[in-house]
Image (cartoon, rainbow, N blue to C red; front, side, top):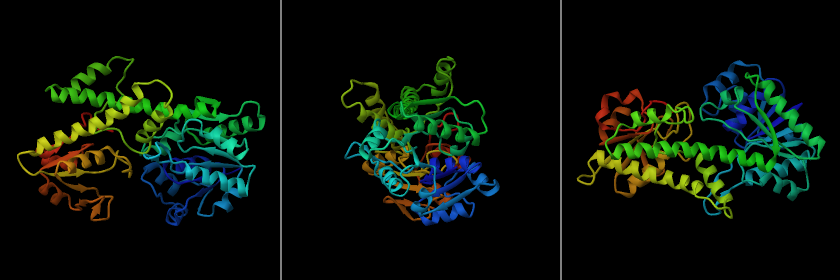
Length: 399
């Protein structure tokens, strides 16, 4: 059995490694440098386990930019290309997924296509109708940044869509699920076979619930801070209830990253003709949190009595990740800039002197000295010598 993976981001590369332990896998990307790194057993993304598996494990994995070659030889094509949220259209931009579907149908129309990119509810069914085929399935991915491979080795669940009445497609879905299980370390993995629209809904509702939980504890933190209360004491008292638990309860500057911002907006768009209050409130809560954080940062720096230079320590969302996309701190930065603050960045993964109009400082000591206040979404011991300048809501010192 041969697999191709379209896209070598966190989802694509982790799936490629899982499958390449037992099957021939082509990893297809449009960037030659990424393909070259993978073929040289180096990871183009930051994930320690991915780096270790590429360097040390015997994997039948070949990276290429030649999609026609890869797809024409494959029994399964997994599509994990980016689907960014289009603010103007108020919907996911699924053009990269559609492009791969069209390419596969041109070179190997009988291959089973598994969409793992996050898509609007109803997308897979729409694609089957548009192209007049049944061999397009959906399988949601549930990965944490910096833990992408781990979450495939120890998955919380495997979900693959099926098409009722089509035995060939049902068998293909079961085969694909079995292949993922074979590459996992965890042995007892809950597995669900749903229709494609239900599977798509699971992904969006799962991430929106996580965003809800983040927003809830952030708003608890806002209340505690503005009323002079100890947020940690309140959080621990709340979370001792076993129905609530102590997971996903560490305050932050807001939710961000690859999935939560776009998935919450997409789910809200899918509610166009459905009554709701909570889904919209989750999206709004994240905007409010960033505004509150920006105001508190400025106050700590002495605003409005003086011009404030705010240092932003790291743009990444989480430790062990290289992802800046939709990071909450960037929304905070824009609010700081709008208030007239000078904003400078310390981000060691950046090799440029300017990022989106903000000055990048490469020397940490210089960064500390020039900043009146340092905004830190997740605390680091690198800042222990300037604790009086730090504004941070990282209560538990973890992601």
